[in-house]
Image (cartoon, rainbow, N blue to C red; front, side, top):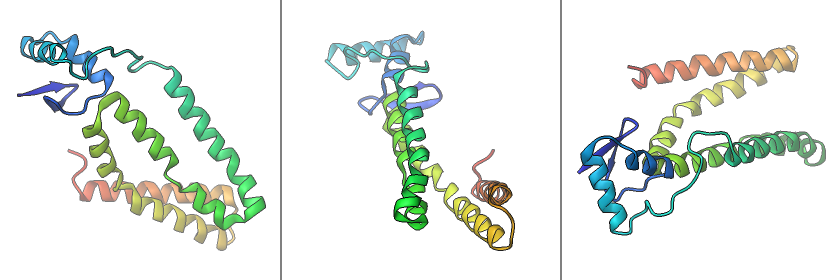
Length: 169
């Protein structure tokens, strides 16, 4: 039997994050509450769940510090090992990795799978951003306005791809 939590169908036994478990526990729908009670009675994943679902806490602090450290490290990397390596490091999926980790811990594997598939829409847009920045700078535009040109290119391509793939209703 499927249960609906926060608008997403969740099958019994499927990987759920702690926030979804708590949502099941506090549900006013008798079939959801009954199924959740059976899962708990059988020693399911709902045992001993604690955490701050949706609140600002340790998760936010870790994400904030990790992102800041990566950004702060790029100029050092460029100065010591070259701008090419800094450019490659700038696109390491560290933000995506940490974002999907925390998304999975709060909402489960299915949400991470859906989000990672949807993220593919951004790949051509990232290419457009990088190309627009490079062409703008090589055409004589300073780097700050070139970043804005790149952001505009990203928005146009991301929007176009999303519309073409039917991502918007």
